[in-house]
Picture (tube, chains in turn purple, orange):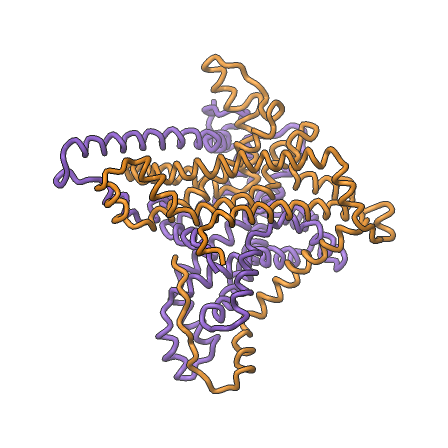
Length: 300
Length: 306
C-alpha cells in the first residue's frame, strides 16, 4: 500500500540536509527529528492497528470473543461455516451487480459529460460546474427520505435497477468533476488533427482522449466503486428482499438476526467483504494521490 | 492537479453556431438526465414533502395535505430534536474539525520527516481504516470498545478500571470511531497540498534562520489555507451525514445519547412513519451543512472567492 509515497516528496528529500554540504551538528539534529517522527508515527500506527487486528485474529478463532486474543485453536472453521451461497456468495454477487453496474453507468456518463466541459467554451459552463461542485457536497443521507417516497410512488423500491441508477447519479457530480480535471491535462493538439480529418466528437473521445487518460479513468473508476461498495444507507433503504441485499446490509442483519452473535463468523465475513476494496487500492497504488490533489485544489 | 483551462477548440466551424452549441452539449445529456431525475428531483420533492403530513401509515398516509410550517414548529419545540442538533455538532466538532483535521495534518507533516518504511507502513494502516466498508468499521469499533472488548483488556492489564464505553460515553465512542475511519482522507489532502509547496520557499526561510514552528505558522499554514478550508468543508459535510457507523455501533442509544440528526431523521421517518416530518429534519440538516460551508468559504483567501 503506497498511498503515502504517492505524492512524490521532492520537499522531504531535499529538506534533509546532506552531510557533505552542511555541518555535522545539523545532520545529527535531522537524525533526531527523523527518529522522533518515526516514533510518533509508529505509536499512531499501533493504535490504528488494534481494531484491525481483532478482525484478522477472530476470523481464525472458532471461539472468538470481543477482545483481541490469539486463537486457542487457530483454524478455518469460521470460513467453512459461512462458505455457502446463502451467507456469502449471494450477498457478494449482489454487491458486485449493484456497485459494478452503478460504477459503469457513472464512469461512462461522467466521461461523456466531461468531454464538452473540458474542450469547449460556453456561457453555461461555469454555472454548470459550480452546480456540480455544490452537488458534490450534498449529503446523500439528507435526500434518502424523498428518494424513498418517490421510489414508492413509481414502484422502484426493491428494484436492483432503481438502486443502481440512484447510486450512479449520487456519485456523478464528483466523477464528472474529477474526469473534467483529468481531461484538461490531456493536450488538445492530437485531437485537432483528428477533427480536421473529420472524426466526430464521440469517436475522438473514445479512440484518442480516453486511451490517453487510462490511468485517470482507473482512478475515477476505483474511487467510485470503492465508495459504493462500502455504502450501507442506500441499499438499506432501497432494497428489501433478502435475495437482493448486498453484503453491506447482510453483514448488518448477520448480527441482528440471531440472539447469540457468532463473532468469528462475523469477522470472517467482514474479511471477505473487505477484500475487494483492499485489492483495488493496492492496484491503485501510487496513483491514489492524483485524485486528492484534485480535490485539494477545488476550483471552478 | 492544476485546473488549467483547455485552449478554445473552435476548429470545426462548419455548422451554424446554435446547432453547433447544441450538438456539443449532446454528450452531457445522459449525465444531466440522471442528475435531474435522481438528484434534483428528490431535492425539489423534499422541499414539498417537508411542508406536508405525508406518512407511511395513519392519517397522512390516506390523505396527504399541506400543513405549512407545522413540521418545523414541531421540531423546534421537541427537546429530542435539540438533543440531536447538539449531538450532531459535538460529533462533528470532535471527530472532524478537531480529530480528523489535526491528526491528518500531524500525520502529513510527520511523514515528510520520517523514514520511507515507517511512512509506508503508517500510510497503509491509516488508509486501510479508511477504505474498509462502513459496516465493518462499525463492528470493529463495537468489539474494540465493548465491555469485554480489546480496550478494556488493555486497560485492566495496566490496572485501570474497565467500563462499557458504548454505554457510558456513546457520543465519544462514535466520534473516535469516526476519527479512526476518516483521518486518511485529510492526511491525503494535506500530503498532496504539502508536496505542492516549492522547496525553494522552505529553503530560503531556513537560510533566514526561521525555526520549524515559525516556518510552519508563517509559510506552510498560509500557503495551505485553501486546502485547509476545502478539507474542513468536505469532512464537515461528510461527518454531518454519518449514519451507518453510528447505526451499527449504538443505533443512537442508549436512549438517545448518541442520536445525531441523521438517526433522529431515520427514526421519525421510518420507525414512526412520519415522512413529512423526517424530511423537514433533513432540510434542517442541509441548512446546517450550508451554514458551515459558508463559514469555511470565508477562510479562503480573497482572490479565490469571487
